[in-house]
Length: 251
Length: 251
Image (cartoon, rainbow over all chains, first blue to last red; front, side, top):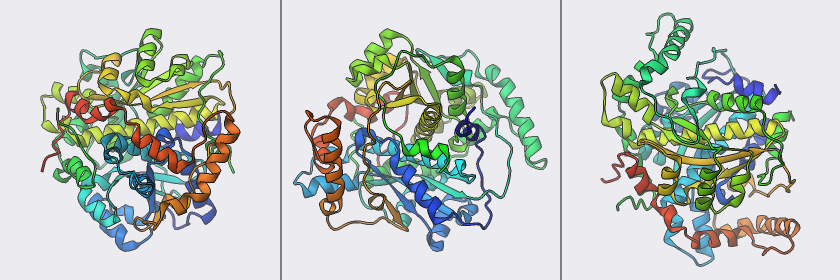
């Protein structure tokens, strides 16, 4: 097993970092790796924001409700960026509706996520740790404002990077057999039955992680998370529209 | 520079593969890596289809219009999968509307893309090559049918993997400075000016790649691609709705 894969198989989220900064050489490499990532149609419809301003970070942490966001040595936000190419086309005399369609949005969203994961792998290969912040979308409208995003851009995911100051256990994943299907989707008779062993594994993991924390099986977590709706998260599509994208969802 | 990053910085799309198969040990490792990828909220709202059936591949290639899709030694489709957790909740007596909301869709979409990129890096670290097929979304409705996807699932991206039978040049990327901004989005006065050097670099790249092929700068490609709309790609959001997701895009 090569070192790349060894690192990938030991991936865990790192939420606490030492004070040691990410060097400017490391930072440059991380950005180069992100920039080299495959991109839909070669169109590079994403961008990155590097957030160093403490006040912006504080506001972002209010949205994410994860205070440790403010303390990540490096903090990035990967965004859909269709604005840049729309401006290029405009300067060349073209303003087709397509520049703002959902196809472009989805391409940019994919680009941004691929680049984020590529950077994560690169960081981990350097011995750095990483934490994703999906929580930046807890309030998409406010996040757009905090980040000062123009039309035809949209935040996808945040990523914190630094030198790990904790060594968490590997968090168990459901077996590959429940997630990988050959030549067509497989529906199971009872998902609770299929998840039994994994549920037990998850409970043992939580027991070991923190004896004082309430222990939940995976299936119970699914229900808890589905019932705890963050209302402002459900505005995603409205904010996508407010950012200038044409939804065209109607028949 | 460590071997992981060396590989990442030499990423290029591989479209032609030798007959040498991906071994079952390699396949198992690739799936384990995908499964270990970070996932929104720990909810694992994505799945993978491995497509080995020649007839399914032929149909997929009709949608993608990329014939070489049929010939990839391994072919995967990463999908949003909210169905599995919805079934778990249902078996536990809960059918909240949230199980089908756009928040869940976006989480699953992000999960699927992160897992795809993680698998790509793993494959490349083994000396394998990879090609993304964003083109599976050229006709989302038909792709859903071909793949036999149930409600609350949706295709994100295809990925072909195998032993490279070509050694393409590195495709130039626009400079990091046009894509990475500190503390807020940066708008440039003239994008054509900013892209001038990159446009020249791209033309040289195409000249070297294939002297007979029409040579286009990046900025001209942007216009060409915006003007060549694939109508069925613009149905994405309708098909997301047909797959049972609640769009709630209205004010």
